[in-house]
Length: 212
Image (cartoon, rainbow, N blue to C red; front, side, top):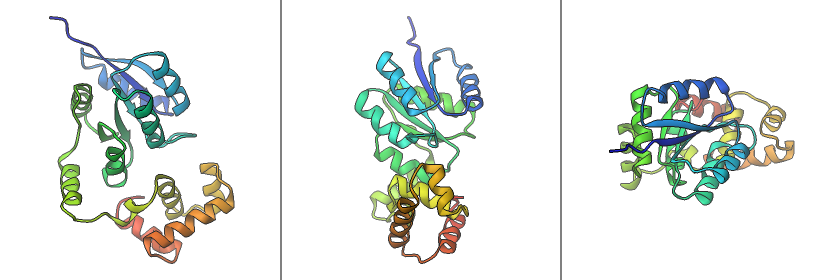
């Protein structure tokens, strides 16, 4: 009986990170890294030119971030399973990634066995959800409510993290390719949504919730 080889697309702007994931997946005979991209634009060109079973996508990339790419991939290739592989803890992005149609969420410190199992599960049409994330989803479904930062849009969350980390509005604008006025508008929205009045409050919240 011939075993189907799972074709994987790696999307990460760091070559070292892609190399590490490729080596981890190389331990499995039924998984092949068939394409690599350093940004969303490259990833879209690859999926338009070839068929992949699973895409492993980083969150933070130049241009479109991983969640923007996830949304685009779901439209372009609805059958392509997209796993988010990020340095950020599940608490920050996992729920919103699953809402956008991700097949799962892994952090980059995941062991080889977990990564391989997640790729196989995603390729088979399942979802990789850790016990901690499953508990959180159950809480949300049961009316447990959302953490304040989960009420922010994806772009607002990016701005929030940078401000909470101590970057000036000018630095935030340069990092995210936004004008200072736009960053100021985002900051005002974030403070309003989170019921806070200063950057110091944002920083304290981010530290207490493991966001920075």
